[in-house]
Image (cartoon, rainbow over all chains, first blue to last red; front, side, top):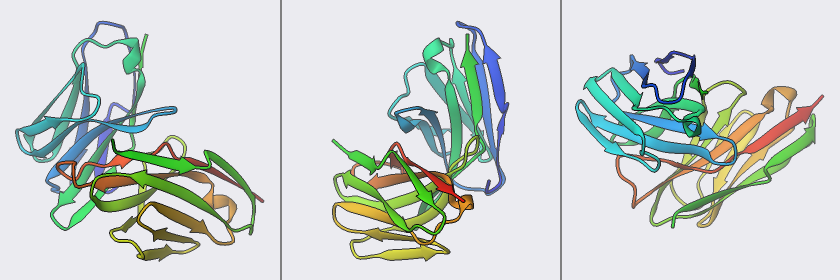
Length: 113
Length: 112
């Protein structure tokens, strides 16, 4: 998985609780992304980062926040989890200029009850 | 509005039976088209990037081609281990920071 780890790999949480997912890379890539994958929707971008402390919103950012204090770590926080946020979350990295392909982590399966 | 449509949604092939998967797109200023393979319970695995119409890329039994409106992933003499979901994604001129827009995938099953 191109030096990308995600933690936890599985989590069950209750509605209304905050949840933080972590993505860690060892490739020193500039760009990092959070996606969610749901049946019938494909992969949808939540937030992305183009450098330390530089982040921006994606297609489905409502209810999510992110932080990147180090090149290697990108955190996704569900501020108050809802059942609609039950999904599989993938982190991806990209090298930037001249290299546009993204490499994905193994995913985190989140269930909100 | 940018759109990526993959067909068929699912495909069952006998081992050795060649076929093609389709990815049609409508985007503003295509910068690249990407193919990924995804196995159940795993993250997508990068296969190919195509940048301009007429370009072709090959890897083992897979060959990807690109026209101005669509891309095909040709699978020649598939084996059971080629069973997976194949995802297509585009990177368009209107999108920032190398963001990708994905189709919903084609689930391929190769029967021994």
